[in-house]
Image (tube, rainbow, N blue to C red; front, side, top):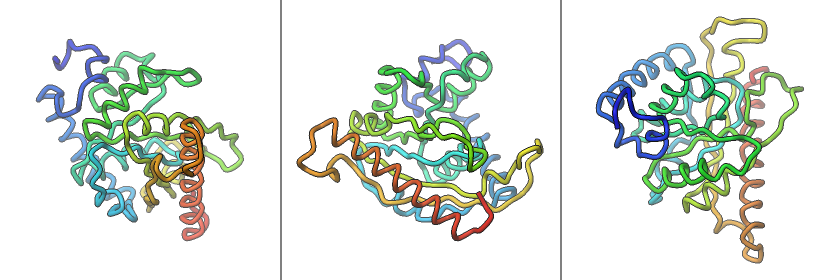
Length: 242
């Protein structure tokens, strides 16, 4: 692969450890700067991170989270990278309409997905990344939920990725990131934000009498239930914060 001339598909289809040296060096510098920034501006707390780091799976882990701000992507990727994990966010392919965005997202490990379709290419890319030990970050809500009365359309598919990659699903939730740029404002402000991992689950946790597709559906619903349960607990612990 080449820093400038390689196509985005080359990055989607290969492991991050195989990216060109210049890309990996630039990635480390950028994330190092962002790590300092997150600690100063957002003072992020990552609760129960040991539940994630103490796992000894042969594969990567599918991480799912609620979504209120683009800052969450930065915080999750940076703080896990700081602990030695490589995280590949799944993003909607609409972002690739901009050539610059496509070039950048490919080189920081993003994998695009065609929402509303059975995007098997994306599923295979994500499952292969899991097999290489890379983690996959997915926001099932699909877009930032900026207000509590905003309609939410949850997108499935993450359990299929986990099944194909023989990987566990780790639900987590975030709180406080919505307040970084309140509605009607464009400049970020320093605020305290919280992130918390829950208990991971796999296909083996589904009831034994369920068929293959039913087991996948069960994992998806249970993971989402746990994700929202963690979110609600964080909100209760920090009244007025979203």
